[in-house]
Length: 90
Image (cartoon, rainbow, N blue to C red; front, side, top):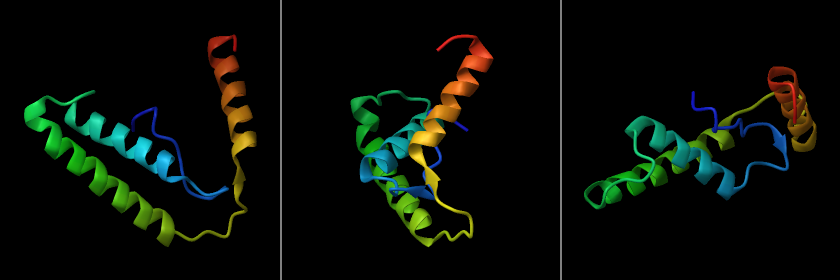
C-alpha cells in the first residue's frame, strides 16, 4: 500500500471529500506509475481518479463497525510517536 494513503474509515468527523480525493489520487498515481500524466494520458488518469473516489465514497458509506470512532488528533499523536521511535526525532 502507498504510504501516503491514510485510513479514512471510522473517524469522527468522517472523511472529507478532499481526503477521499487525495487518497484516490495517490492510489491512481501508484497504479499508473505517473506523478503527473502526459497530455495523452491525462483524461484517462483523471477519469480513474474520479472513479476511485466514487468507489471509495461508496465503500466508506457502506462499512459498519462496532468499534468506537477514532479521534484524528489521537491518531496524529500516535503517528508522531511512531516516527520519533523509528527515526529518533520529530
